[in-house]
Length: 98
Image 1: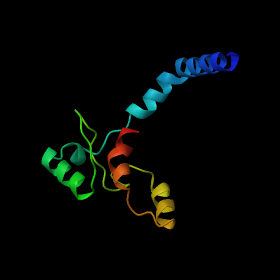
Image 2: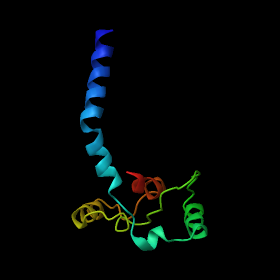
Image 3: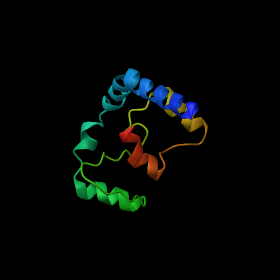
Image 4: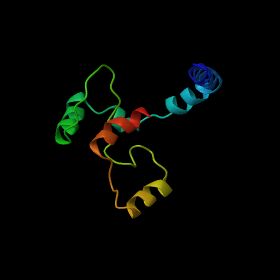
């Protein structure tokens, strides 16, 4: 029981202490304008082509490349060296939310 309470207080303190910083990091990213302005039918076509099942209101845009996700060039280069040239379907839809 003490462990559970200690963990609870640690998590509560951590969220209270760092929550606003973490939120600021995640909320500052924006997709490039041409991606944000893609028509919904184009987004759905990309989802269908990549077998991405997603639903909901105000879904994030889809990034088909790491460049569109605004990854640093050094990171893109390191990924290419590992043979990773484009995001997986779940990354295409999910990375813009992170």
